[in-house]
Amino acid sequence: MTVTNGTSQNGHASATLADAQELYIGGSYKPAAKNATFPVVNPMTGKTLYQCASASVEDYSAAIDQAQEAFGSWKKTPPSKRRLIFLKAADILESYLTQDAPEILSSEVSATKSWINVNILATAGILRETAGLVTHIKGEIVPADRPGTTILVEREAVGVVFAISPWNAPVNLTARAIATPLICGNTVILKPSEFSPKSQHLVVRALTAAGLPAGCLNFLPTSPDNAAAVTEFSVKHPAVRRVNFTGSDRVGRIIAGWASQCLKQCVLELGGKAPVIVLEDANIEDAVEAVVFGGLSNAGQICMSTERVFVHESVAEVFKSKLLERVKSLKVGNPNEEEGVSISGLYSPASAQRVVGLMKDAISKGAKLLCGDLEISGPNKTILAPHILEGITTTMDLFHKEIFGPYLCLAQFSSEEEAIALANDSEFSLCASVFSRDVMRALDIAREVRAGSCHVNGPTVYIEATLPNGGTGGASGYGRFGGMAGVEEFTERKIVSLAKPGMRYAF
Ligand code: NAD
Image (tube, rainbow, N blue to C red; front, side, top):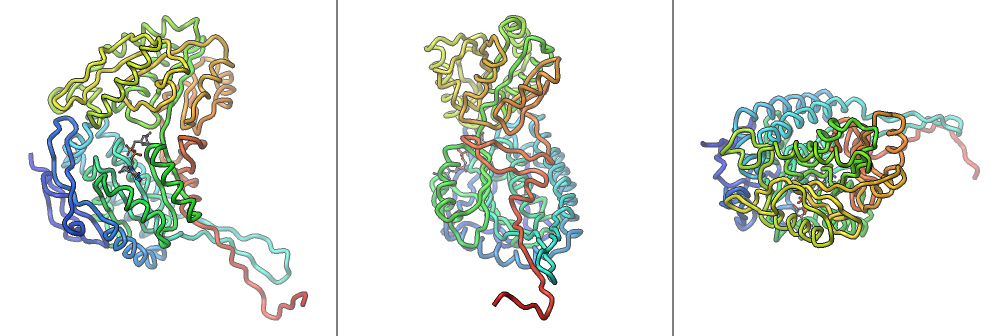
Protein backbone atom coordinates (compact mmCIF):
# COMPACT_ATOMS: atom_id res chain seq x y z
CA MET A 1 0.00 0.00 0.00
CA THR A 2 1.31 3.42 -0.88
CA VAL A 3 0.98 5.91 1.89
CA THR A 4 0.86 9.52 0.87
CA ASN A 5 2.18 12.27 3.00
CA GLY A 6 -0.54 14.47 1.49
CA THR A 7 -0.25 17.77 -0.27
CA SER A 8 -0.80 20.68 2.02
CA GLN A 9 -2.50 23.93 1.19
CA ASN A 10 0.99 25.39 1.00
CA GLY A 11 1.78 23.11 -1.90
CA HIS A 12 4.20 20.67 -0.29
CA ALA A 13 4.88 17.61 -2.37
CA SER A 14 3.37 14.21 -1.65
CA ALA A 15 5.56 11.47 -0.30
CA THR A 16 5.20 7.82 0.59
CA LEU A 17 5.86 6.28 3.97
CA ALA A 18 9.11 4.97 2.51
CA ASP A 19 10.23 8.50 1.63
CA ALA A 20 12.34 10.48 4.05
CA GLN A 21 10.56 12.62 6.58
CA GLU A 22 12.08 16.06 6.26
CA LEU A 23 12.37 18.91 8.72
CA TYR A 24 9.67 21.58 8.57
CA ILE A 25 11.17 24.99 9.24
CA GLY A 26 9.66 28.38 8.50
CA GLY A 27 6.92 26.86 6.32
CA SER A 28 9.22 24.74 4.12
CA TYR A 29 10.21 21.12 4.15
CA LYS A 30 13.95 20.61 3.92
CA PRO A 31 16.68 18.08 4.60
CA ALA A 32 18.82 18.48 7.69
CA ALA A 33 22.17 20.24 7.56
CA LYS A 34 24.74 18.03 5.82
CA ASN A 35 21.82 15.79 4.76
CA ALA A 36 22.06 13.94 8.07
CA THR A 37 19.48 11.19 8.55
CA PHE A 38 18.65 8.39 10.94
CA PRO A 39 16.63 5.21 10.35
CA VAL A 40 13.09 4.90 11.71
CA VAL A 41 12.42 1.25 12.40
CA ASN A 42 9.19 -0.75 12.46
CA PRO A 43 9.35 -2.25 15.96
CA MET A 44 7.15 -5.18 14.96
CA THR A 45 9.40 -6.34 12.11
CA GLY A 46 12.73 -4.73 12.96
CA LYS A 47 12.94 -3.40 9.40
CA THR A 48 13.83 0.18 8.54
CA LEU A 49 10.75 2.10 7.40
CA TYR A 50 12.51 5.19 6.07
CA GLN A 51 15.40 7.55 6.66
CA CYS A 52 14.36 10.60 8.64
CA ALA A 53 16.14 13.94 8.49
CA SER A 54 18.20 14.41 11.66
CA ALA A 55 18.21 18.04 12.77
CA SER A 56 21.44 19.52 14.06
CA VAL A 57 21.99 22.45 16.41
CA GLU A 58 22.38 24.56 13.26
CA ASP A 59 18.88 23.51 12.08
CA TYR A 60 17.40 24.22 15.51
CA SER A 61 19.04 27.62 15.52
CA ALA A 62 17.49 28.44 12.13
CA ALA A 63 14.08 27.20 13.27
CA ILE A 64 14.17 29.26 16.48
CA ASP A 65 14.95 32.36 14.38
CA GLN A 66 11.98 31.59 12.13
CA ALA A 67 9.70 30.99 15.09
CA GLN A 68 10.84 34.23 16.69
CA GLU A 69 10.06 36.11 13.50
CA ALA A 70 6.64 34.49 13.08
CA PHE A 71 5.74 35.31 16.70
CA GLY A 72 5.45 39.01 15.91
CA SER A 73 2.43 38.55 13.66
CA TRP A 74 0.94 35.33 15.08
CA LYS A 75 0.43 36.86 18.53
CA LYS A 76 -1.59 39.63 16.88
CA THR A 77 -3.70 37.29 14.72
CA PRO A 78 -7.36 37.76 15.71
CA PRO A 79 -8.77 35.02 17.95
CA SER A 80 -11.45 34.08 15.42
CA LYS A 81 -8.76 33.35 12.81
CA ARG A 82 -6.72 31.25 15.20
CA ARG A 83 -9.85 29.35 16.24
CA LEU A 84 -10.80 28.62 12.64
CA ILE A 85 -7.37 27.17 11.85
CA PHE A 86 -7.66 24.81 14.81
CA LEU A 87 -11.21 23.76 13.91
CA LYS A 88 -10.21 23.09 10.30
CA ALA A 89 -7.13 21.17 11.43
CA ALA A 90 -9.35 18.94 13.59
CA ASP A 91 -11.46 18.00 10.55
CA ILE A 92 -8.38 17.45 8.40
CA LEU A 93 -6.75 15.27 11.04
CA GLU A 94 -9.90 13.16 11.30
CA SER A 95 -9.82 12.61 7.54
CA TYR A 96 -6.38 10.96 7.91
CA LEU A 97 -8.12 8.07 9.66
CA THR A 98 -9.38 6.85 6.30
CA GLN A 99 -6.09 7.75 4.59
CA ASP A 100 -2.58 7.01 5.82
CA ALA A 101 -2.80 7.44 9.61
CA PRO A 102 -3.54 3.74 10.33
CA GLU A 103 -0.49 2.54 8.41
CA ILE A 104 1.79 5.21 9.82
CA LEU A 105 0.75 4.51 13.41
CA SER A 106 0.79 0.75 13.10
CA SER A 107 4.19 0.68 11.41
CA GLU A 108 5.93 3.18 13.70
CA VAL A 109 4.49 2.27 17.09
CA SER A 110 2.67 -1.08 16.54
CA ALA A 111 -0.66 0.62 17.30
CA THR A 112 -3.81 -1.51 17.49
CA LYS A 113 -6.98 -0.36 15.72
CA SER A 114 -8.45 1.11 18.89
CA TRP A 115 -5.21 2.95 19.68
CA ILE A 116 -5.19 4.42 16.17
CA ASN A 117 -8.74 5.66 16.76
CA VAL A 118 -7.77 7.15 20.13
CA ASN A 119 -4.83 8.91 18.54
CA ILE A 120 -6.79 10.50 15.73
CA LEU A 121 -10.27 11.07 17.14
CA ALA A 122 -9.28 12.17 20.64
CA THR A 123 -6.66 14.46 19.12
CA ALA A 124 -9.27 16.10 16.90
CA GLY A 125 -11.14 16.69 20.17
CA ILE A 126 -8.05 18.27 21.73
CA LEU A 127 -7.74 20.66 18.77
CA ARG A 128 -11.45 21.60 18.96
CA GLU A 129 -11.36 22.09 22.71
CA THR A 130 -8.22 24.20 22.43
CA ALA A 131 -9.83 26.28 19.66
CA GLY A 132 -12.54 27.20 22.16
CA LEU A 133 -9.96 28.48 24.67
CA VAL A 134 -8.96 31.32 22.40
CA THR A 135 -11.54 33.78 23.68
CA HIS A 136 -10.93 32.85 27.32
CA ILE A 137 -7.36 34.10 27.38
CA LYS A 138 -8.35 37.11 29.43
CA GLY A 139 -6.73 39.68 31.65
CA GLU A 140 -8.30 41.74 34.44
CA ILE A 141 -8.72 45.30 35.62
CA VAL A 142 -7.52 45.65 39.19
CA PRO A 143 -8.80 48.51 41.41
CA ALA A 144 -5.95 50.98 41.92
CA ASP A 145 -5.22 52.49 45.33
CA ARG A 146 -3.39 55.40 43.78
CA PRO A 147 -5.81 58.12 42.70
CA GLY A 148 -6.02 58.81 38.98
CA THR A 149 -4.66 55.40 38.01
CA THR A 150 -6.10 52.51 36.00
CA ILE A 151 -4.44 49.11 36.27
CA LEU A 152 -4.77 46.51 33.55
CA VAL A 153 -3.35 43.02 34.02
CA GLU A 154 -3.03 41.75 30.50
CA ARG A 155 -2.34 38.14 29.58
CA GLU A 156 0.16 37.93 26.78
CA ALA A 157 1.85 35.25 24.72
CA VAL A 158 5.41 34.52 25.85
CA GLY A 159 7.23 33.88 22.55
CA VAL A 160 8.91 30.73 21.27
CA VAL A 161 7.98 27.50 23.07
CA PHE A 162 10.19 24.40 22.79
CA ALA A 163 8.03 21.24 22.94
CA ILE A 164 9.25 17.63 23.17
CA SER A 165 6.67 14.88 22.89
CA PRO A 166 6.93 11.08 22.96
CA TRP A 167 6.03 8.07 20.81
CA ASN A 168 3.55 6.27 23.07
CA ALA A 169 0.44 8.29 22.15
CA PRO A 170 2.26 10.14 19.39
CA VAL A 171 -0.62 12.11 17.90
CA ASN A 172 -2.44 13.03 21.14
CA LEU A 173 0.69 14.04 22.99
CA THR A 174 2.04 16.06 20.08
CA ALA A 175 -1.22 17.99 19.91
CA ARG A 176 -1.16 18.49 23.67
CA ALA A 177 2.40 19.81 23.56
CA ILE A 178 1.75 22.39 20.87
CA ALA A 179 -1.96 23.26 20.84
CA THR A 180 -2.28 25.48 23.93
CA PRO A 181 1.04 27.23 23.30
CA LEU A 182 -0.08 28.03 19.74
CA ILE A 183 -3.65 29.10 20.52
CA CYS A 184 -2.23 31.53 23.11
CA GLY A 185 -0.25 33.23 20.33
CA ASN A 186 3.15 31.61 20.86
CA THR A 187 5.18 29.91 18.17
CA VAL A 188 6.58 26.42 18.60
CA ILE A 189 9.67 24.32 17.95
CA LEU A 190 8.60 20.67 18.13
CA LYS A 191 11.06 17.85 18.72
CA PRO A 192 9.27 14.55 18.07
CA SER A 193 10.49 11.19 19.31
CA GLU A 194 13.01 9.38 17.13
CA PHE A 195 10.59 6.41 17.16
CA SER A 196 7.57 8.13 15.63
CA PRO A 197 8.32 11.19 13.46
CA LYS A 198 5.62 10.55 10.84
CA SER A 199 2.92 9.79 13.41
CA GLN A 200 3.68 13.06 15.17
CA HIS A 201 3.98 14.90 11.89
CA LEU A 202 0.27 14.15 11.22
CA VAL A 203 -0.59 17.00 13.59
CA VAL A 204 1.85 19.36 11.87
CA ARG A 205 0.41 18.35 8.50
CA ALA A 206 -3.16 19.02 9.63
CA LEU A 207 -2.39 22.43 11.13
CA THR A 208 -0.33 23.44 8.09
CA ALA A 209 -3.07 22.31 5.71
CA ALA A 210 -5.56 24.29 7.79
CA GLY A 211 -3.58 27.46 7.16
CA LEU A 212 -1.28 27.89 10.18
CA PRO A 213 1.16 30.57 8.96
CA ALA A 214 4.75 29.68 8.13
CA GLY A 215 7.16 29.73 11.07
CA CYS A 216 4.49 29.25 13.74
CA LEU A 217 5.12 25.51 14.05
CA ASN A 218 8.50 24.02 13.24
CA PHE A 219 9.10 20.29 13.26
CA LEU A 220 12.61 18.99 13.85
CA PRO A 221 13.13 15.27 14.33
CA THR A 222 16.64 14.32 15.32
CA SER A 223 18.63 11.15 15.85
CA PRO A 224 19.11 9.78 19.39
CA ASP A 225 22.79 10.78 19.14
CA ASN A 226 21.87 14.43 18.62
CA ALA A 227 19.01 14.55 21.14
CA ALA A 228 20.99 15.86 24.09
CA ALA A 229 22.85 18.54 22.09
CA VAL A 230 19.80 20.02 20.32
CA THR A 231 17.73 19.88 23.50
CA GLU A 232 20.34 21.64 25.62
CA PHE A 233 20.83 24.24 22.89
CA SER A 234 17.10 24.92 22.60
CA VAL A 235 16.31 24.91 26.33
CA LYS A 236 19.10 27.44 26.89
CA HIS A 237 18.42 29.58 23.81
CA PRO A 238 17.45 33.09 24.95
CA ALA A 239 14.59 33.37 22.42
CA VAL A 240 12.98 30.19 23.80
CA ARG A 241 10.75 31.42 26.60
CA ARG A 242 9.07 28.21 27.76
CA VAL A 243 9.80 24.47 27.56
CA ASN A 244 7.44 21.56 27.73
CA PHE A 245 8.59 17.97 27.89
CA THR A 246 6.58 14.75 27.99
CA GLY A 247 8.82 11.78 28.62
CA SER A 248 10.72 9.87 31.27
CA ASP A 249 11.79 11.27 34.62
CA ARG A 250 15.41 10.46 33.65
CA VAL A 251 15.39 12.97 30.78
CA GLY A 252 12.99 15.26 32.66
CA ARG A 253 15.61 15.74 35.38
CA ILE A 254 18.25 16.66 32.77
CA ILE A 255 15.95 19.19 31.11
CA ALA A 256 14.91 20.68 34.45
CA GLY A 257 18.62 21.13 35.24
CA TRP A 258 19.31 23.05 32.02
CA ALA A 259 16.16 25.14 32.47
CA SER A 260 17.06 25.97 36.06
CA GLN A 261 20.46 27.26 34.94
CA CYS A 262 18.66 29.94 32.94
CA LEU A 263 15.67 30.21 35.31
CA LYS A 264 13.29 29.12 32.57
CA GLN A 265 9.78 27.86 33.27
CA CYS A 266 8.99 24.27 32.21
CA VAL A 267 6.04 21.94 32.07
CA LEU A 268 7.37 18.43 32.78
CA GLU A 269 4.87 15.63 32.17
CA LEU A 270 6.85 12.57 33.23
CA GLY A 271 6.20 8.99 34.18
CA GLY A 272 3.64 7.28 36.38
CA LYS A 273 3.18 4.25 38.63
CA ALA A 274 -0.57 4.44 39.04
CA PRO A 275 -2.06 2.55 41.98
CA VAL A 276 -5.59 1.16 42.12
CA ILE A 277 -7.20 0.49 45.51
CA VAL A 278 -10.04 -2.04 45.52
CA LEU A 279 -11.96 -1.86 48.79
CA GLU A 280 -13.95 -4.78 50.20
CA ASP A 281 -17.25 -3.16 49.19
CA ALA A 282 -16.21 -2.54 45.56
CA ASN A 283 -18.11 -3.78 42.55
CA ILE A 284 -15.51 -6.38 41.59
CA GLU A 285 -16.61 -6.71 37.94
CA ASP A 286 -16.27 -2.94 37.45
CA ALA A 287 -12.89 -2.92 39.15
CA VAL A 288 -11.62 -5.81 36.99
CA GLU A 289 -12.76 -4.11 33.77
CA ALA A 290 -11.10 -0.84 34.77
CA VAL A 291 -7.86 -2.55 35.83
CA VAL A 292 -7.64 -4.49 32.56
CA PHE A 293 -8.30 -1.35 30.52
CA GLY A 294 -6.04 0.82 32.66
CA GLY A 295 -3.21 -1.69 32.84
CA LEU A 296 -3.15 -3.18 29.38
CA SER A 297 -4.30 -0.50 26.91
CA ASN A 298 -1.50 0.12 24.40
CA ALA A 299 0.28 -2.86 26.01
CA GLY A 300 0.69 -0.85 29.23
CA GLN A 301 2.68 1.89 27.51
CA ILE A 302 0.75 4.86 28.89
CA CYS A 303 1.96 7.21 31.61
CA MET A 304 -1.39 6.70 33.39
CA SER A 305 -1.20 2.87 33.12
CA THR A 306 -2.32 0.94 36.18
CA GLU A 307 0.94 -0.42 37.56
CA ARG A 308 0.02 -1.51 41.11
CA VAL A 309 -3.28 -3.04 42.24
CA PHE A 310 -4.01 -3.18 45.97
CA VAL A 311 -6.99 -5.38 46.84
CA HIS A 312 -8.62 -5.79 50.24
CA GLU A 313 -7.71 -9.25 51.58
CA SER A 314 -11.40 -10.26 51.91
CA VAL A 315 -12.03 -9.90 48.16
CA ALA A 316 -8.54 -10.71 46.86
CA GLU A 317 -9.34 -14.26 45.69
CA VAL A 318 -12.52 -13.38 43.83
CA PHE A 319 -10.82 -10.33 42.24
CA LYS A 320 -7.87 -12.47 41.17
CA SER A 321 -9.95 -15.20 39.55
CA LYS A 322 -12.13 -12.72 37.63
CA LEU A 323 -9.05 -10.76 36.53
CA LEU A 324 -7.29 -13.91 35.29
CA GLU A 325 -10.36 -15.00 33.36
CA ARG A 326 -10.68 -11.58 31.72
CA VAL A 327 -6.99 -11.22 30.86
CA LYS A 328 -6.83 -14.69 29.34
CA SER A 329 -9.60 -13.67 26.90
CA LEU A 330 -7.45 -10.91 25.37
CA LYS A 331 -5.90 -11.46 21.97
CA VAL A 332 -2.18 -10.81 21.69
CA GLY A 333 -0.29 -10.42 18.40
CA ASN A 334 0.34 -8.32 15.33
CA PRO A 335 -2.79 -6.25 14.54
CA ASN A 336 -1.72 -6.08 10.89
CA GLU A 337 -1.94 -9.85 10.58
CA GLU A 338 -4.89 -10.72 12.82
CA GLU A 339 -8.27 -9.21 13.60
CA GLY A 340 -9.29 -8.33 17.16
CA VAL A 341 -5.80 -7.89 18.64
CA SER A 342 -5.93 -5.93 21.91
CA ILE A 343 -2.28 -6.31 22.93
CA SER A 344 0.27 -5.49 20.24
CA GLY A 345 4.07 -5.41 20.39
CA LEU A 346 6.13 -3.03 22.54
CA TYR A 347 7.99 -0.11 21.05
CA SER A 348 11.40 -1.81 21.15
CA PRO A 349 12.95 -5.22 21.82
CA ALA A 350 14.98 -3.63 24.63
CA SER A 351 11.79 -2.50 26.35
CA ALA A 352 10.33 -6.03 26.20
CA GLN A 353 13.56 -7.45 27.69
CA ARG A 354 13.53 -4.85 30.45
CA VAL A 355 9.93 -5.66 31.42
CA VAL A 356 10.70 -9.40 31.56
CA GLY A 357 13.88 -8.72 33.55
CA LEU A 358 11.99 -6.73 36.17
CA MET A 359 9.34 -9.45 36.46
CA LYS A 360 12.01 -12.16 36.84
CA ASP A 361 13.70 -10.12 39.53
CA ALA A 362 10.41 -9.77 41.44
CA ILE A 363 9.78 -13.52 41.10
CA SER A 364 13.26 -14.23 42.49
CA LYS A 365 12.30 -12.08 45.49
CA GLY A 366 9.06 -13.96 46.17
CA ALA A 367 6.40 -12.64 43.76
CA LYS A 368 4.22 -15.32 42.17
CA LEU A 369 3.50 -15.39 38.43
CA LEU A 370 -0.23 -16.01 37.86
CA CYS A 371 -0.40 -15.49 34.13
CA GLY A 372 2.14 -15.22 31.26
CA ASP A 373 5.27 -17.24 30.47
CA LEU A 374 7.99 -14.54 30.46
CA GLU A 375 8.57 -15.31 26.77
CA ILE A 376 8.95 -12.59 24.14
CA SER A 377 7.73 -13.43 20.65
CA GLY A 378 7.28 -11.82 17.23
CA PRO A 379 9.73 -11.35 14.36
CA ASN A 380 11.56 -8.58 16.23
CA LYS A 381 10.97 -9.98 19.75
CA THR A 382 8.64 -7.21 20.88
CA ILE A 383 5.41 -9.12 21.58
CA LEU A 384 4.74 -9.86 25.21
CA ALA A 385 1.51 -11.47 26.42
CA PRO A 386 -0.10 -9.89 29.50
CA HIS A 387 1.45 -11.00 32.76
CA ILE A 388 -0.02 -10.91 36.25
CA LEU A 389 2.07 -11.18 39.39
CA GLU A 390 0.86 -11.36 42.97
CA GLY A 391 2.60 -10.84 46.25
CA ILE A 392 4.65 -7.84 45.18
CA THR A 393 6.32 -5.96 48.00
CA THR A 394 8.09 -2.65 48.44
CA THR A 395 11.48 -4.43 48.34
CA MET A 396 11.08 -5.15 44.61
CA ASP A 397 12.13 -2.83 41.75
CA LEU A 398 8.85 -3.80 40.08
CA PHE A 399 7.03 -1.96 42.86
CA HIS A 400 8.92 1.30 42.34
CA LYS A 401 10.08 1.56 38.71
CA GLU A 402 7.77 2.54 35.88
CA ILE A 403 7.37 -0.69 33.88
CA PHE A 404 5.61 0.44 30.67
CA GLY A 405 4.58 -3.05 29.61
CA PRO A 406 1.58 -5.42 29.56
CA TYR A 407 1.67 -6.54 33.17
CA LEU A 408 -0.39 -6.16 36.33
CA CYS A 409 0.77 -6.79 39.83
CA LEU A 410 -1.36 -7.44 42.87
CA ALA A 411 -0.85 -6.99 46.57
CA GLN A 412 -3.29 -7.26 49.47
CA PHE A 413 -4.11 -4.87 52.28
CA SER A 414 -6.17 -5.16 55.43
CA SER A 415 -6.96 -1.53 56.31
CA GLU A 416 -7.62 1.74 54.49
CA GLU A 417 -4.52 3.26 56.12
CA GLU A 418 -2.37 0.44 54.75
CA ALA A 419 -3.85 0.85 51.26
CA ILE A 420 -3.17 4.59 51.26
CA ALA A 421 0.38 4.07 52.54
CA LEU A 422 1.08 1.50 49.80
CA ALA A 423 -0.40 3.75 47.10
CA ASN A 424 1.68 6.71 48.30
CA ASP A 425 4.91 4.70 48.57
CA SER A 426 6.17 5.96 45.21
CA GLU A 427 8.26 8.71 43.71
CA PHE A 428 5.53 9.07 41.05
CA SER A 429 2.33 11.02 41.56
CA LEU A 430 0.45 11.13 38.27
CA CYS A 431 -2.84 9.32 38.82
CA ALA A 432 -4.69 6.69 40.84
CA SER A 433 -8.09 5.03 41.26
CA VAL A 434 -10.24 3.84 44.16
CA PHE A 435 -13.08 1.33 43.92
CA SER A 436 -15.90 1.25 46.47
CA ARG A 437 -19.71 1.23 46.36
CA ASP A 438 -19.56 3.85 49.11
CA VAL A 439 -18.67 6.90 47.07
CA MET A 440 -18.11 9.17 50.09
CA ARG A 441 -15.66 6.64 51.55
CA ALA A 442 -13.85 6.47 48.21
CA LEU A 443 -13.78 10.26 48.07
CA ASP A 444 -12.07 10.39 51.48
CA ILE A 445 -9.41 7.99 50.24
CA ALA A 446 -9.04 9.84 46.93
CA ARG A 447 -8.20 12.94 48.96
CA GLU A 448 -5.43 11.07 50.81
CA VAL A 449 -3.77 9.57 47.73
CA ARG A 450 -0.91 11.71 46.43
CA ALA A 451 -1.72 12.07 42.73
CA GLY A 452 -2.58 14.72 40.17
CA SER A 453 -5.83 12.83 39.53
CA CYS A 454 -7.63 10.12 41.45
CA HIS A 455 -10.63 8.45 39.86
CA VAL A 456 -13.46 6.87 41.82
CA ASN A 457 -14.78 3.65 40.26
CA GLY A 458 -13.03 4.37 36.97
CA PRO A 459 -9.68 3.43 35.38
CA THR A 460 -6.41 5.26 35.99
CA VAL A 461 -6.24 5.89 32.23
CA TYR A 462 -8.61 8.81 31.91
CA ILE A 463 -7.93 12.20 30.42
CA GLU A 464 -9.95 15.03 28.92
CA ALA A 465 -8.61 18.06 27.10
CA THR A 466 -10.26 20.46 29.55
CA LEU A 467 -8.61 18.94 32.63
CA PRO A 468 -5.46 20.30 34.27
CA ASN A 469 -3.47 17.11 33.73
CA GLY A 470 -0.17 16.50 35.43
CA GLY A 471 1.66 15.12 38.41
CA THR A 472 2.16 16.60 41.83
CA GLY A 473 5.93 16.69 41.65
CA GLY A 474 8.65 14.08 42.10
CA ALA A 475 9.20 11.66 39.24
CA SER A 476 5.88 12.59 37.58
CA GLY A 477 7.04 16.15 37.03
CA TYR A 478 5.25 19.45 37.42
CA GLY A 479 3.08 21.88 35.49
CA ARG A 480 -0.31 21.28 33.88
CA PHE A 481 -1.35 21.12 30.23
CA GLY A 482 -5.13 21.17 29.85
CA GLY A 483 -7.78 23.89 29.79
CA MET A 484 -7.11 27.18 31.53
CA ALA A 485 -4.24 25.59 33.48
CA GLY A 486 -2.42 25.26 30.16
CA VAL A 487 -3.17 28.88 29.33
CA GLU A 488 -1.54 29.84 32.66
CA GLU A 489 1.59 27.89 31.70
CA PHE A 490 2.01 29.39 28.25
CA THR A 491 1.07 33.02 28.84
CA GLU A 492 2.49 35.73 31.03
CA ARG A 493 0.62 38.33 33.07
CA LYS A 494 1.64 41.87 32.32
CA ILE A 495 0.69 44.77 34.56
CA VAL A 496 0.01 47.91 32.57
CA SER A 497 -0.80 50.97 34.67
CA LEU A 498 -2.23 54.16 33.20
CA ALA A 499 -1.67 57.39 35.11
CA LYS A 500 -3.77 60.50 34.53
CA PRO A 501 -1.82 63.56 33.31
CA GLY A 502 -0.75 66.00 36.03
CA MET A 503 0.13 63.41 38.69
CA ARG A 504 2.58 64.55 41.39
CA TYR A 505 4.65 62.29 43.68
CA ALA A 506 6.23 62.27 47.16
CA PHE A 507 9.38 64.02 45.95
P1 NAD B 1 12.38 9.44 27.15
O1 NAD B 1 12.53 10.39 28.28
O2 NAD B 1 13.15 8.18 27.21
O3 NAD B 1 12.78 10.15 25.81
C1 NAD B 1 12.29 11.45 25.52
C2 NAD B 1 13.18 12.13 24.55
O4 NAD B 1 14.35 12.49 25.22
C3 NAD B 1 13.57 11.29 23.36
O5 NAD B 1 13.12 11.92 22.18
C4 NAD B 1 15.08 11.23 23.43
O6 NAD B 1 15.67 11.44 22.18
C5 NAD B 1 15.43 12.37 24.32
N1 NAD B 1 16.66 12.17 25.10
C6 NAD B 1 17.27 11.01 25.43
N2 NAD B 1 18.37 11.25 26.17
C7 NAD B 1 18.44 12.59 26.31
C8 NAD B 1 19.33 13.46 26.99
N3 NAD B 1 20.39 12.99 27.66
N4 NAD B 1 19.11 14.77 26.94
C9 NAD B 1 18.04 15.27 26.26
N5 NAD B 1 17.16 14.50 25.61
C10 NAD B 1 17.36 13.18 25.64
O7 NAD B 1 10.81 9.15 27.04
P2 NAD B 1 9.98 8.45 25.89
O8 NAD B 1 10.46 7.05 25.69
O9 NAD B 1 9.89 9.35 24.71
O10 NAD B 1 8.51 8.43 26.53
C11 NAD B 1 8.13 7.52 27.52
C12 NAD B 1 8.02 8.21 28.86
O11 NAD B 1 7.12 9.30 28.73
C13 NAD B 1 7.45 7.34 29.96
O12 NAD B 1 8.18 7.56 31.13
C14 NAD B 1 6.04 7.87 30.14
O13 NAD B 1 5.47 7.67 31.40
C15 NAD B 1 6.23 9.31 29.83
N6 NAD B 1 4.95 9.92 29.45
C16 NAD B 1 4.39 10.83 30.29
C17 NAD B 1 3.14 11.39 29.99
C18 NAD B 1 2.47 12.36 30.92
O14 NAD B 1 1.50 13.00 30.53
N7 NAD B 1 2.93 12.52 32.15
C19 NAD B 1 2.51 11.02 28.80
C20 NAD B 1 3.12 10.09 27.98
C21 NAD B 1 4.35 9.55 28.31
